[in-house]
Length: 336
Image 1: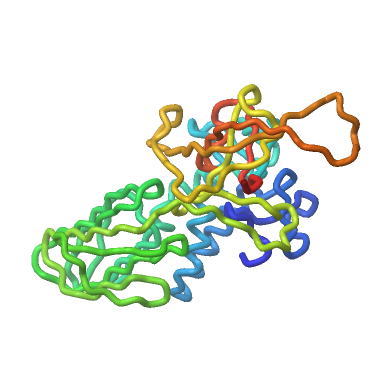
Image 2: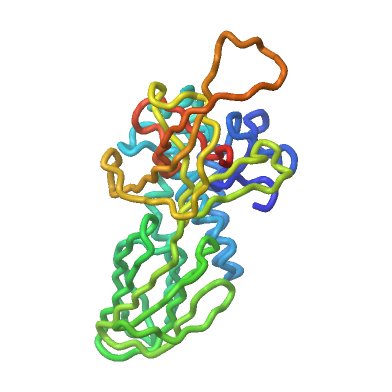
């Protein structure tokens, strides 16, 4: 995760051995990052988080699930990626099936068991690795505690956990403090609730009353990320993230030339639900420019003033790309 993992949670940079090469060797266009590998990383992260009770493992798990793994399946659930590159030149698309069809059932299994990645329940304790909408129960001193989670995750910052039981009861609620978050608040009835911080988790060990609703808000601001300069493929490039999601520049072949050169890395990037995408998926419009190619130029020549043309570029979540036909795509873009 420190030298060989893509920002999307993809692992295994080459198809040659379906595995790793050298430290910091993370090509974008020729990356492998098999869907199964991201699912495997999420499974390992979940088990390590359970065994060692460290939020770092859940950070990697969430990154792999919402980016590298989820990209492996189309919105309709009928087409799949085997490899998940971080750049496409309109030459990579999901297909209906594979001769070696390990990825489709693995991604389906992960989605079908998503609650096992998001939550952990023990006697007298609820751990939220990342919030997903749904309901469940736990036991505390023999009493059954039912809970319901509502959430805007992964696009929005707010979530809540409501509890239903017969009488006041003491139990622990642990909320993972994500690595992408700079601040978080937990409130009950509008009042900030006292908590502790252990191993990357916000811990609320208290007496709860029937009908209590815990409100959770994680700061979720857009961030432009850079890579360690040892990753030569990304020198001078940045990637846009918001919360757990990695975003990519995507456009159909006609509207955006392949020679996109840079995006303006403004801090306040406006995100809003995209009318062309389902499920309230958000996109962001970022100002940028592309290099105007001249096919009459020789292959090599002395330095001259390059011609650029301004162009707004749309960034969408990486998992959502390639759902509208062949497209050009890039996670890492040159910094403006």
